[in-house]
Amino acid sequence: MKGRNSTLENFDYDLQSLQETRTIARQGKLAQAQLAKFSAEQIDQIIRNMVKAAEENAVSLAQMAVEETGFGKVEDKIFKNRFASTELYDFIKPMQTIGVINDDKVNKVMEIAEPVGLLMGIIPSTNPTSTTIYKSIIAIKSRNGIVFSPHPSALKCTLAAARLMNDAAVAAGAPANIIGCISKPSMQATNELMKCDEVAMIIATGGSAMVKAAYSAGKPALGVGPGNVPAFIERTADIRKAVKNIIASKTFDNGTICASEQSVIVEESMRSQVMDEFRRQGGYFMSPEETGKVAKLLFVRGHAMNAKMVGRSAAVIAENAGITIPSGTKVLLGEQQGVGEGYPLSYEKLTTVLGFYTVKDWQEACDLSIKLLNNGGVGHSLSIHTENPEMAVRFAEKPVFRILVNTASSQGGVGASTGLAPAFTLGCGTWGGSATSDNVTPMHLINKKRIAYGIKDVTENQSSSPAACGAQSCGSSAVSDEQIMNVVNEVINLLKKRGDN
Image (cartoon, rainbow, N blue to C red):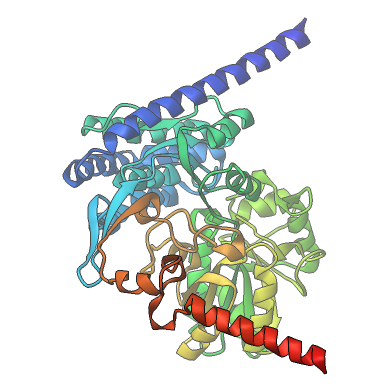
């Protein structure tokens, strides 16, 4: 009976999950239809209240996320929550997403923004609250509603962030249920939300399988692939600064941002200097035996990250791997001689571990970077530390859409330390199987309606077109019936003469 009751409970849960999903989709669609009529002033008022709520709850949401998932650090998640609200708002506030957004007086084309409709947001466990805040704000800015599918291991904190954003929006005048979230997550519920008629577009941030599922749902989707960011320290680089940036990036929220560095590449002429600098700043170079133990701990089922080691400190990883490291170690580095099978640290590692490579020169660094990117990060990001501007341009030829120069890759990729758009959805373009190569903003979530005036007179040429020629004469080049009969008679007479001969 116990087994039967368990089966019934699972069946009931699945039914409840599906029903909840259908309900929040319908409610979200109705709410969005009302929001579509709001003015720019009304939308800005709503967003300001959402930002205020996110700021006031940045600490508690960060604590919830770390407590529930075990990933990352509270202080860094606080920064991400604030970045996804206050910094984001400052960037998107001037954006015109309502009414006439462009008026080309020369070509007489006027562009009018229209919302996409109801969005579905897929939320990862690594950045649950900040991604929920970010997607909620860019959705409202473009007059869209949004419903979230949370990762089961980050359900509580994602649900709390979504409800916080919805309550703040409604308190400032938005329609009820403009932001929704599944509280009973299941694969059936996620699939239902992806394919339901109410959802107009999917914004997917998560694992490769989930992103592929979003693109196969039969509707527009903005998905992002994994990052496997190589960081090249070129011979002209400021070594101390380069190492400082890499460590700051890799330890930021313990490496949970997909734009974080995954491998360090150095030229052999500066290998010793770079290694010494890493040691001075808290890097620990593992022996081959220690590297093997850590690699075995980090991955399951081939190259899938062990969830228990995602977003963990170097000390926690070392303890679980059974190796001893110096007190104060910030990152673990393991030398690798190749890429792919047999070289586990050549894959993405969303934690405080780096692969380490030595090359002869920048050309070999180029080749190695491409191999690493094709090993799970094509289209995403690449980091280079150099004082030679020409070198940065050379690396711009690599198959990525973010070339981050002399900065921490995690913070640079999301736009915290660079001029890129603040975002937690980083497109990988067609190279990475994504519909966009941009950092996603509200401008990706609008349709553009165009009013186009005639500026060229094409009617003058219609009289000489084949369609206008019927039985009537087509100008001076027309051939009369009499001329045609004369040609026919000449051909007949010619044939008769040939027959006489």
